[in-house]
Image 1 (cartoon, rainbow over the protein chains, first blue to last red):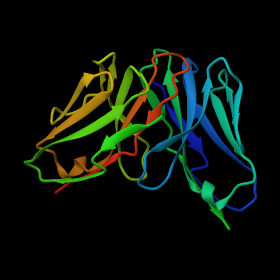
Image 2: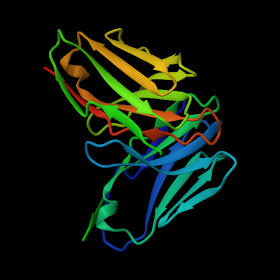
Image 3: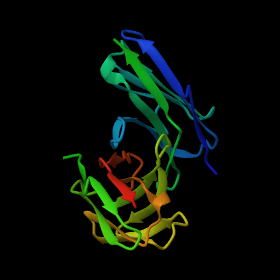
Image 4: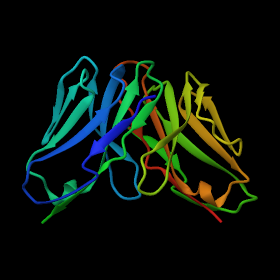
Length: 112
Length: 113
């Protein structure tokens, strides 16, 4: 059974810092990995999708990498802003494309 | 249009009530999902529909009854719920391909009294 963990559980940084959020998964037989952002009480916003054959994806200040063989993904946020404050979740899609398994999330607070 | 629309946004219901949650997408996605999320926890899968057929039921109690009337619409019928069923209910959709980016709705905040 796929298990997904995220480190750290919470992070508080001053504005302008570069950040790295980590995601680990136990079964490397994945279709893809997706990073989401969730604001309190809201739905999930898709940030980046990395297919299993890819190594990284970039969108604006965000860069996500995937090392399938070691079961790891990182989300890099450059020049953090207070508006980046949210919970960041990674989710792994298994090989049959039927189910996303979520990590517990990293709660990020960027202080002005 | 990359939007998944869920209605209602908020719902308060008694334990003897019957209500329904609705989810709609017009992206041509053939996989649709219901997730339940408790406070400060990640979403937990409840049901998956593929091509309008139920493909995964994660041992969800029968007081939750999903329905997929067509490829754009997903319902979750609720009956005789318990207070512990209070949560944020999220709907998602995706293509059934490797480029299967999932899109989530804003959720329905359900309170059972």
